[in-house]
Amino acid sequence: MITFDNVSKSYGNAHLAVNAVSMEIAQGELFVLLGTSGSGKTTLLRMINRLEDPSSGTITVDGKSIMLQDPVELRRNIGYSVQGTRLFPHMTIGENIAITPSLLGWDNQRIINRVNLLLEMVGLDPHLYVHRYPSELSGGQNQRVGVARAIAADPPVILMDEPFGAIDPITRERLQDEFLSLQAQLKKTVVFVTHDIFEAFKLGDRIAILNEGVVQQVGTPEEISSIPASRFVLDFLGQNRILLLLQNRRVNELERDYDPVAPYSGIDSRYTLDAQDSLAAALDKFRSSHTRRLPVRSGNEVVGSLTVESVTNHLIPVDKLMEDAV
Ligand SMILES: Nc1ncnc2c1ncn2[C@@H]1O[C@H](COP(=O)(O)OP(=O)(O)OP(=O)(O)O)[C@@H](O)[C@H]1O
Ligand SMILES: [Mg+2]
Image 1 (cartoon, protein in one colour):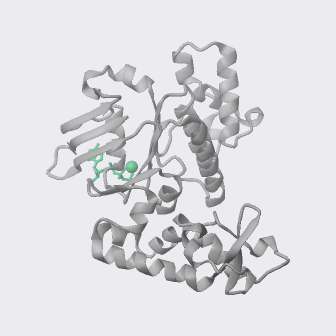
Image 2 (cartoon, rainbow, N blue to C red; image 1 turned 90 degrees about the vertical axis):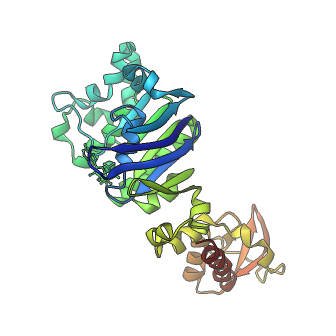
């Protein structure tokens, strides 16, 4: 577990890069720091492994203040993928990834296996890339190697600073999916920085929204999209909020609106709502089927039907709640 207790950081001028941050990041949690440029995300991350020291306040990792731990020892247990990854130019891709495992004294075969596995995981064919130099890879490929390097030694804590920043949307989506399924198995404690709202809401178990060094809200994607805690969060999400709500809510939340008599016999599975579908997926099925009512399936069973109006109506009480809260 990582805790921040009233942590502030000033780089020497009046302006605080991080301002009185208190929060807890649970073990095995994928925790996202989301905010605009200059909001203090990288500074927060760099304080966790003591690349910067707080001006005041306390950070603990596993219950121990990081100021009382040897920085080298601390960093050995924390993988860090740097914003705008810079690999060592005179080392091959394989050597770059192998840096920490080599320092830890892993035997050669274990290192080779690990490097190959990681390259495959980030979508780079080991045969093609392991012996190349960083200058022989594209910017996005360099960035993916940076991610592989950060997790090479299998550390319990991983810090990732905009790891998919310079990658096209299609590759990015694939890497996000792979990262999520990897995380589901490994359950690392991950602190993940992004300024991309959709990336944050897709990946985060919880998200902290930052503005000018101040944490505006910490919550699950569902909590933040349903009830933004401040005017700032509301404005920051803007019109994206409606999409986030649709992506974070499922058809089965509308169970009370199901019409029990499903007016369908032969069911076309393309145009059947699944109880687990997001409301965004549901609306897309209404759109592509050109109908206002579709059957709902739960497992193999048709449990009723739903109208497009019940989906849109579902969003109205949510907004009422939000206006009350802000
Ligand atoms: N070494 C430094 N010296 C002085 N000021 C700094 C230093 N590093 C960061 N800052 C300032 O601290 C604030 C927070 O910077 P930080 O890098 O944490 O932002 P960020 O949220 O990571 O932004 P970005 O999304 O652009 O990467 C900014 O105002 C920045 O100018
Ligand atoms: Mg940054």
